[in-house]
Image (cartoon, rainbow, N blue to C red):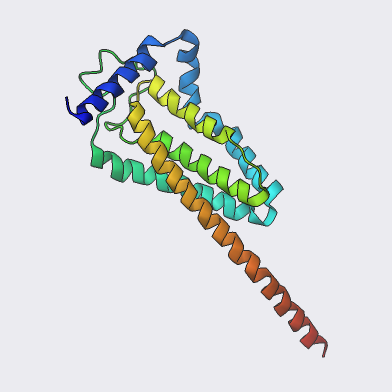
Length: 209
């Protein structure tokens, strides 16, 4: 058995272990909500509020780049990477359909990489590193939040663990890059502020002459 075949076999074993053999009636009810974007609207609202509370003038840059991070991870994953890999979802794979319990609608045909993993790890990375640059705070719970959403994606039968891993890596790298852009943006704004103040001061002095 080649390495790729062995990894594919391991992926399928893990899906059956997580999705079928470790099932519980409570998890069957909770996991579909855990992966639903609407469930996390309060979190998104909190992050927007916190950006204004802690970042003040940095808030709009934080919000705009958060949206841009999501747009990049979601569009590239769905439009480029999934067709490129062409891997069937567990719930779409004829060899897995008899083993997978469909707790939610199966959705699209392809699964590699996971949009949820890319999106949530992208946001987690951007928020973690950007907030650290704003006030030095470190919020490791952001990584746990993204991981919980991703686990739910495997539990409901929409993804293999490797789909999650690839999506998480892609999302984290994207979020990290966007956080660097955030720091660069704010440094430029900070460097311009003294120049603008000096220009306004000189203009006021000239006006008095």
